[in-house]
Image (tube, rainbow over the protein chains, first blue to last red):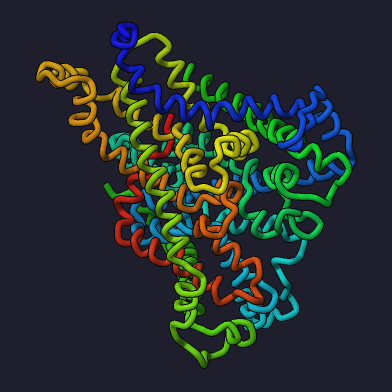
Length: 306
Length: 274
């Protein structure tokens, strides 16, 4: 007891430590351990070493699903990084410079963040649906009737429709983070630049952007993690199977399908090995995130060293 | 200091267009919620014949909306309470005291930022099942409440920045560690706690993945799962999908618009910096 008395901080840290360890940290290690077994979650666990990994990359059907899902996740990340992120910076800078109506704009742009994903997908249906969609109606109204499509149902558009909804819902968060970072820039620096006569965009590229570089890098890694683990949009839009021809399939949905969902797609060993193969995919996702996160940490660390 | 660009017409136009699109979607959905199912499907763009509260009545009476609302609210309140309590304790422990492995402990709490719940869900599922909490809201609550990384990070930064004199003067007054924590430190941290509440509330309220896996019986499900049940069969349930979406969205957005200044400040200060 005296050992504890000398270390009062332990009493503060322990409860949170236990809960966090049990449900946030232990599962990651446990997942790796389970991935070395053939297991359906109920019956006997059979240790099979790295066989699950060999099967994941060797079985044609599984590997096709894996690469398809991974490709979509990468597309999502690239679209977010190359289109959404610059848009967030642009809008944050406009708000930062106090454009007229900025309070209204920032509330409006942020507001979809408060809408649950099923509602956002439903709103997507209201707009892009072939029969009841507003978008087709609009095309007809402006005389582009031959361009109408059942947008939600065309496999080629699948992942882009997902992206549009993701972007609409999430664009405000990054914008507000960037805006917060911009407001931290010392006003002396900005005033000096103003006196020097630096133009609006000149100030953005030479002062604002370098000052908030760390926030941009952090946002980039968050975008990446999001794209690799995004689940709900694809699931709601395409169901367990990931839509027609798996056109909206992503990594997390592939993982869910193997671990909790599908009974038909692959057959054979899959059902008796749902937990084993499921965790194997989770570990691959883990690795895919971890490698990039390490690179990010190294880059940020180097920068602060300079 | 005037930072405005000289010509703002193009930029303003873009922002106006974008904002009015969002507004349009919300207003359009609310408008459609007052129309009958038959009209929605066969005469989507025509003038309404029927315009009444029948769908709302159906949602509250037949579809048991209050049940889902209660479930979502209960999960939100319980998770927030646990997260605020535990994370402020952890952060106070790390920020206030000097001990070996201090930075290691903080780092340990931060690695959770990198790994969303999706990755560990199989072991979490098995754990919850073995604890007999499957299909219980407590299963969802403990899993969501274990996401302590972000709150611990924000609060630790806050407690570390507090001047040491503050701890000392509280001590001289004869207060024990716990009294100091509850009476002095916790109230001091309330702005940080406010922004944590905002950020976490959005995440918990709209949480889809964990309830989907943990909750099976209809009586325990949350609002997002209810809406998905309706949207899964739009031909049959489009009226409920419409009115359910409105009820799940519009009240919260009105609250947000009323307090948007404070809320957005809270979100901005929660951005993970440096």
